[in-house]
Each structure stands twice: as C-alpha cells, then as structure tokens.
Image (cartoon, rainbow, N blue to C red; front, side, top):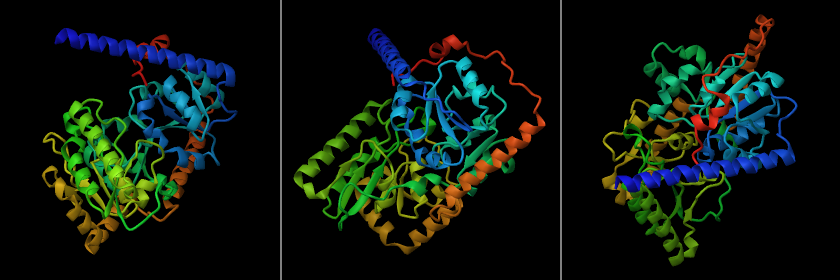
Length: 433
C-alpha cells in the first residue's frame, strides 16, 4: 500500500510540474505577443499569489475594484501562470505577472504604489511585506466567524478592511496586543452593492432554495462542510417537493481531500439531473461556477455552512439557515450571529422543508436578521458599503501622502530576500492549477 501511495504521489508531482511549465509557456507566449499589460500608472496593487483553485477569492472583488479604478488606478499583480492567464481574460482591471522578487521590485520602483491589497493569507504574501513605502492592507475575501477571521496573521498588515462591529469585537477579543481602533477599518460588504438579481430561470410560484455548502476543510478545526453529512438529505427533500426549486452551488474545492465528500457531491449533481428529467419545468440547477450574485439576492431561502456565504446572505436581510457541523472537532464561534442563527443538524436534514417554511413565515426571524445584519455590516442601504470602502481608501491615501512627505529623502533599499529569486517556484511549487 505504501509503494502504491508513493507512486501516486510521485505521478501527481510530475503532473503538476508539467501543467505548471505548460501554463508558464503559454503565458510567456502571450506576453511576447501582447506585452506585459503593465499600465502607465498604478496607485493600488492587488497582490494575488495563489493558483487558479482560489480565484474565487479575488473574483468577488472584481466589481468593487472596477469602481475604485475610476478614481485610483488599480492593477492585479500575480505569481501563478495559470491564474494569470485566467485573470487576464476576465479581470476588469490590468493584470501583470512577475515571477521573481527582483521583477516585483522593478515594477514597484516604476510606480511607487500607495497601497497593496491582499485577499487571502497565502504564504507568498510574506515576500511583499519587505517593501515598506506603501500600506499593506488585508481586505480578505469574506466575512465569517471561522477561526481564520482571527488569525494572528492580521498583525502582519498595516491595516485591515473589515465588515463591521462584529469583526472589531472578534479581533479585539482574540488577538493579543492588536490595536483594533487604529488598524481595523469598517467598510461593510461592498460586493453586495454589485450583485445582479437576474435569475437564469423565469421566476414563478416555486420557493427557490439556494444550498451553498463549503468544502470539507484541510484541518479538523475547520471541518465545516455539510455535503457528506447533510447534503444528500437536503437535496432529496427539496427535489421531491413540487413547491420548491433547488439551486446547488458547492465550494470549488469540495472533495479535494475527502473521497466521501466528493462522492456525495457527485450524487447530488446526479439527483438534480434526474429531477429535471422527471419535471423539466422545475428548473432545478447545479450551479458549477460563474458569477455569484443572483443566487444570494434572488433566492427565497439560503442554506449554507459556516463560511463567508452566511454573511453575504445576512447582508441582504433574507432568510438563511446554517448547517451545524457534524464533525465534533470543528470550532464553532457562537458569540456573534451564529449564536442566534437558525441551525440545521445532520439528523434533521430530511425535515428541512418544515424549517424552511418556518423561516419564511416567522416575523421574529426577519427582525432577528435585521438586527444581526446591522451588527455585522452597519448600514446595508444600497451604495452605503461602497461609499465606506472608498472613504477608507481615501483615508489611507492621505496618510500615505503624509508619510511620503515625512520621508521624502528615503530611498527604497534592496534588502536580501529570505528566498532566492530563482527558486521561487521550487520553494513554493505550483499546485497544478
């Protein structure tokens, strides 16, 4: 068994290496044909060092970044060839790829950007922290009560843009010696201002249930996924009802670590296809990608795991049901909204329709949602979050001007990097994206 595992692991490494080199070749050809894509002016850099598997983390920022770029030139800086090829095709702002730290240093020296945004905690973010004449700002890729949201890595950034009072309370309670009042700036959820409510089906009398589970996680404390424990029962109940429509959108990493999870996902997809064959007018949907928006704002009720999807839905003030993790090791923080949320346990998943009806008809449930939406996001009036996002950027722009004036005689120094430039890909190999 050990030999077989070793052979499979070796094949995976070789396959990933081949894919990485092939995409690097494709990107090199594209750059030679089209140029680097580097714009004349850059004030804000979005640093995305991850591979294509995590593109969802930056995709949700497309619309807010496009709006911000109307006043401050924004450019996405990438490190993965595969992710770069995709971003160059779909991102609404310029995308540049620089493989080595030396190349990044040259890019920064040509533009002297005011700030760098980070949407995740990729280890390669550390490479950017060496550059000091800019603000390093963690903007994250969603609001949630996962333990990820109180990582000590927050201290690595000059500032963090967070959703609202709940985030401030969370950081203040969990992080030692972190100046929340100075370093955390509330902006709400600007993405919600850009969600398109247009559905791919004609609205009718059916109750649309949006089931959006997260993946199984990569550690016991973050095993929040419900596909294997709840998913099949949820799908079976909703698909069997003539009053309901199921929209199923799983996390893109679902099943990468757990075979049972992967098989349950496949079974749900097959169940949806079979239900549509029986009744094409039902319009059940396996939503396997594309823009996320209408699913959140147009569905009647959303069922989701502990993830940012809970809070994207919360900002709309519409009913949301949260699955209780079946794993006893999953850490569940219940001091915020999750302490008052409507939970669905695995053993109750087959009775989900009764819970859906209660959430839709209970006025107290709506009042509860309104309270917690304000606590997590502040003013959720359309456009309010975008205004706060832009105000936060302007604040840091003004602080950059002040700091730059105070240190006008400083020169950017080229310090030795903790990683050899030529070994970037080997130190942090591609994942075969």
